[in-house]
Amino acid sequence: MKKITIAIDGHASTGKSSLAKKIAKKFDYIHVNSGSMYRAVTYFILKNDLQNLVESDVNELIKKLQNNPIEFKFDNNSNIYEIYLNKVNIEKKLNDLKVSDYVSKVAAIPEIRKELVKIQREIDRSNGIVMDGRDIGSIVFPDAELKLFLTASAKVRAKRRYSEMINAGVNVNYSDVLENLKKRDTLDSTRKDSPLIIVKDAILIDNSNLTIDNQIQYISKLIRSKQNI
Ligand code: CDP
Image (cartoon, rainbow, N blue to C red):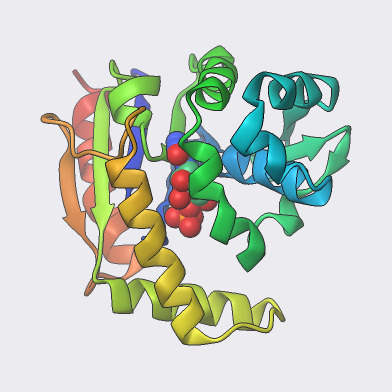
């Protein structure tokens, strides 16, 4: 059976990663969350107070990033790539609201996108891959056999993200989460380099009223039809 590339793009907090993770597990594919790379760069900038370089000297910022490598390491148990900064696993730092508030500004910088897209394209796809993000079907893997675009109402998305954060012990309020999602959607969709778009060959899924199991069922059928081609 053919191993395929599955690109999942969509609006902020539409459950892309949770879905991608489950699909990867079901089909024994690998899962890569490209958003975690943009979040890792953002975490590095905030941690080292480098916001001034974002405004004034992107080349210097890239040099600093190259000296503090961000890497994906594969966890054989979970079949998931986790993100490391200077060999330290920073996966748990990435969903902080401070990171979420700044990430779309960082992700709009073409030089940073170029570096990260290069890493994404170097990942071995031969055993099947599910990658989620904003530009996977349009820029990273335009040849992906299956492209999905996820959306849902902003309120539903904010509720989900808010509960997730509260359950993880993070102290946030709902309206800040809602504002953050709306702000990111606008920035991500209007930036010049690789904006979030629905490519012609993508399948649009509004999951406002769908459970994760509904989505997996539907997407599994799509995957099987592509695998058998
Ligand atoms: O999980 P959530 O939808 O909140 O976002 P994410 O996938 O973690 O991505 C965080 C941010 O990174 C997005 O709002 C985009 O600004 C940026 N991003 C991007 O520009 N391109 C990607 N392929 C993935 C993420």
